[in-house]
Length: 432
Image (cartoon, rainbow, N blue to C red; front, side, top):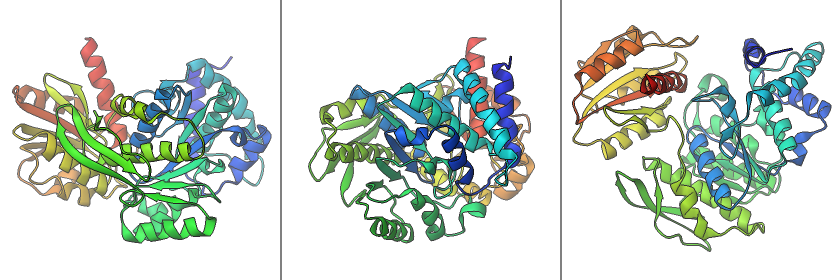
């Protein structure tokens, strides 16, 4: 009998097949499984940043309407199981075991064909689609892993597609311009399927508009068809109004901090409104509770009150710019410590440049991950006075906390994989 641990080990062993563009393996597996993807009421979300937050806002909005919602996300922050969740609860170990027992023989069978073995992400996507079909849910929300056009999640035919934004990330795979990256993300747009977007970059939006014209898909743009109006930021979060062609909200509150979360929340509300146009009897008066109850780990997340420790997985230039703006809005008057680690395939120099002038003390570190960048290299790239290196990140946290007073804050930022490790460390620390 295979154990849960062995099942997860087998899933991770698919990592060696890396990224293989194309949907042929997914089509093959879906055919063998009786096409579960055709029986799902799906919403598909692509974008450089904000996918996870938008998905979480949308899930909470749908749950506030009494709907059962499945979500497929990547990467995970706390536990591997959260990648496939129902109503915010990760599926059980036994479910994973069952899914592996179904998919593993298929993976071995396809490996003997000219298509070759599926990747880890393709395997997990197939498992998610099969699980969601069996769970008989009202809605499922899928977040793309990388790009969109050739992403394994693009096997679905959604009710609504969303593109949160376009930034310069994964350029070695998706292309080295906003236009090229937008072309990959816009690959999720399908014939006559409405598209909601918060994309503002002119090169990127032109690509999306062109794709919508080709597919006869209605486009709903932030600041064109729907709007968010910032009211204020305070300890409770962001306060804003949402409006569109037929609806004006009361003052809404997102407990997720940062002005960018208003755009993510607005995108999620507009998806609800597009579904309402399609005939779903949603109650707009319940949007307030849906937005208010939304949280998403690793996004300007407070994980300790005393000392004050905040985590954020900003891992590209646009994400870092947004984080610095949020730091300035919400952490004024505090002495700020930063612990930072990154992956070597990210635009590290551009991200480090944005750190200057925002922190009193910076410590660069590394962590146990194949593509983790050397801490000394980070410091060389940074070229600033108030930075030091500590390769052992746990020791770095203890050192920084030892220097902090009541009015200080420690921000831990960088790779989402690093953030996941730090989050688990604080969870353990709070129990000891």
